[in-house]
Amino acid sequence: METIIVGGGQSGLALGYWLARSGHDFLILDEHARSGDAWRQRWDSLRLFTPAKYDGLPGAPFPGDRVAFPSKDELADYLEKYARTFNLPVEHRTRVEGIEKMENPAGTGPHGSRFTVRSGSRTWHARNVVIATGGYGIPRRPEFADALHPGIHHFHSVDYRNPAQLQPGGVLVVGLGNSGAEIALEASRTHPTSVAGKPGGEIPVRHGRFAARTVLPVIRFLGMYVLTVDNPVGRKAAAAFHSMATPLIRTRTKELRAAGVNVLPRVAGTHHGRPVLADGRVLDIANVIWCTGYREDYSWVKLPRGVQLEGLIGRRGVVDPVPGLYVLGREFQFAAASATLPGIGRDARYTAEHLLRAQHDSSHSVIPHTESLGAAG
Image (cartoon, rainbow, N blue to C red; front, side):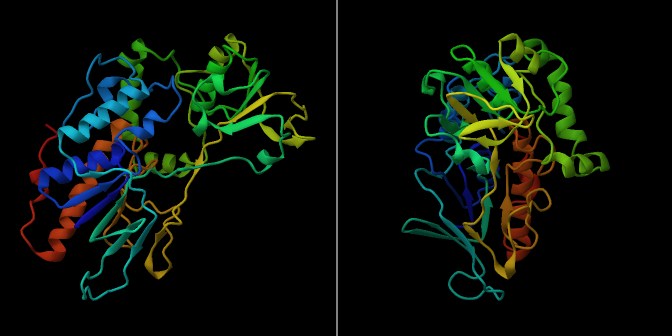
């Protein structure tokens, strides 16, 4: 293949759209059984924070009410239809277990200087590889999680679906980001619930249709065009992005307290199997949900010359030390909105243009010029 895209979510599909328009030879490898399954597997009541008018990928606006907030299943069905509509070449049930850049600077031999991509007993060779899996695929738990008493039912938010999973008794949600706030609010309807952590700010108005018409367009503009790595303000924001908590959007502390959720300091450890807060209080609860985020894991990507992909974003996803390697769909890859649906289409187009240009420069063959990508339809 000319290009292998690892990951069949919104990033991989958006890039596939642009490459398909150019007639490029590519394949998308997706570990799931259907396009959109990564969304179908999230908790049952999850809805997007962005209104439908901002949730479409290139060439296909999101259907329905433009200021409604689609459910995770509606987005999943949209992605499945998107792949089918544009006849994108997706290999499902294909989990990539290894990527290796072959050391052959002269570009000689049967495969030249190319990547090897492995999944089980299958192997592909490609001139380019795009990692579109997102940067945070491994659930992160604190080291003391396993010290909890065996009678406490605890699990990460990646495994949360609905409150029916919880045993009778109190619930402690650890982490006050957007996932923690939404899950705590839902759990409070059936269980006494507390949430531990400090939010990283909140949007100034109530989330909903009014915000979709007034405030969210401003936030989108800032995230797309102001907070980018092309200007000093954006570069400063990017440097601090990973150390800051994401502001609460739909469920703020005001809504949590009104629903009877206790907002507590962070969890510092355990005492005789019970969670201990930073202020020394020991909690007697029956359930813990770890809303503590994810961590990077690129151990399956083997690169030459000791290059490590961890922490390496490159210029707009172009990994300069390894020609032909690209990363797509990561936080603040170019702008604050890069990992969101509104920002993905733009970043995918940039990646496609760079990839086609590099191919043209290296082969001097007749490859469609980048302008041939045209508008998004």
